[in-house]
Length: 79
Image (tube, rainbow, N blue to C red):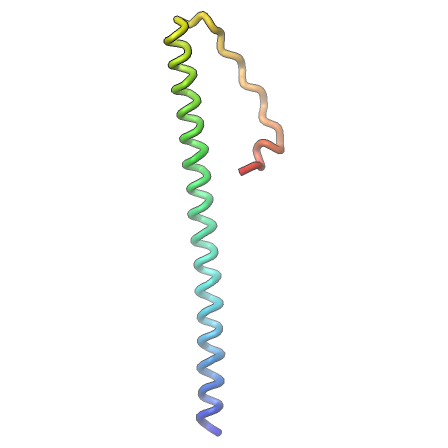
């Protein structure tokens, strides 16, 4: 009977460790996705600025730059 009690205790502890490990993995994955999204947004912004500069250089500044429209709440929450 003592062996069964020990086995049950070991299984419970192993289950708790597994659940704890899953939580840590989920948090790490969320942080990684957040950093990846921020990096992608920065790359898009940099590309947009470079495209605007190239267009300005190509047209000799003949085309005026439009002021950006304020982002709607939907657009901000898309990522």
